Image (cartoon, rainbow over all chains, first blue to last red; front, top):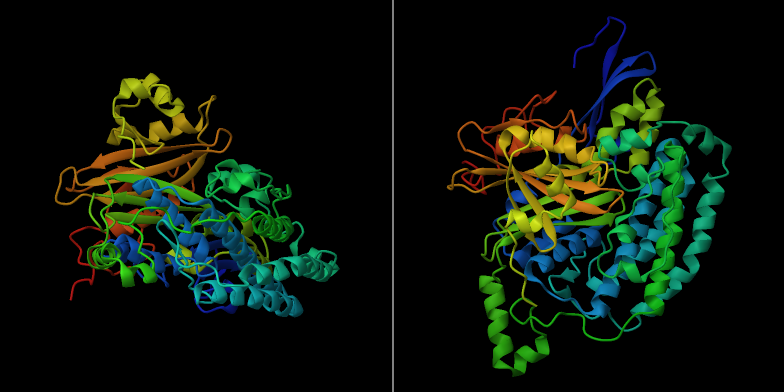
Length: 392
Length: 165
């Protein structure tokens, strides 16, 4: 980028700037305090996950998907599993589907809490960060209880879930879900009615609905501009159609509108968790497909067939019929899509991830040009980017 | 549960709004269609991809106004080697459609659709970076994920997984 006039200068923000939420580099051309042009520079976190996937068996890709978007690993697990299950034509038992929905909503709360905490921290409200991470810790403990891992859960498997949830797990989730709405009230008391917060966010980094659609924005970034679309409600997957929830939409298209969308989503997600707890079906957690799903440990000790299937799946994987599938889910950031191509072998021919942040980041120049540098920080926070998902 | 076989007969699929729209237009060459696992794929010729996108975006009955994704698949050593894959979404009708363009391995290039959807900017740069497919008319076609001085295109099938040593 070359300065157009003598009076402008180039300023580098990042790649290590703490408010860029990872290793994002933003090149700013500034005239005094005003941003003339802005260009995001990405790729610092590129690890070639798509290439790695092509060298792994289908079931070995699941842990890789955790690392795409490290704030909502379960959403990525789900999206990949749904895509491969669609290729295989697998039927998933109701209990596994409901567990998936419940854990996905907990992940959404987890992700939004990190966003809210860091976004507020960027703008200068330190205490919200500490409140948010208190609740996030509770969720991470739930994840640890169910999957053995706090962040990189890899809990979903192609065809169902990895393990039965432990005894007392649902009571712990219920205890959390009962107390959480009061906590959201606390955050809102600290921010929504806070005059400093509203001055820093209202009318800042506006984007219209048409521009947001043209730039491929999705999720709260799009709903903050008044476009009422949510894949969970409009193109339901994993039995989301059985849950009742509102899709929060704001029309202003500024930082505050996106903030309100996400904070309301916290409440809606919590309500979905409560519905899932109340109606959790009984039954199996894995589909009936012995060639795809690992047998139970106990069966392997007594049944020859189970042992053979286990050996075959681990050493040779399982062949997936030829075809291609694009599966999209509503991640906390928007449309997360997995495009999986199979050539009939046990390894995916191509796995492509459509990261919501990747497209959302493209709205940044439109939001920030002509505004102050301080607003850039607010805008980056408000589109809630995760660089792992952008760079892959 | 067995997967139903794919339907590839264009005449049987004419009911799909996107395919009907593209077949009606004289400016777009439809090379084939496939309906598999509840997903619609339309193959269009290399020269008509931009026109096809404009038509689908502005379709009065079922506008595919949202651009989801563009990526590519490398079928090396088959020819034509590359498939560029576009995913479009209709926000109002909740429909998805997949457009495909086949490209030969010798100097692969296709027209950019950034003038239809600015959203395609980063996605096309990514395909250029990782597959070496050029998008004519792209405003800023440079590497996006790999370093500027990187040699080769990592997602091509003839690029080793562990890289060149």
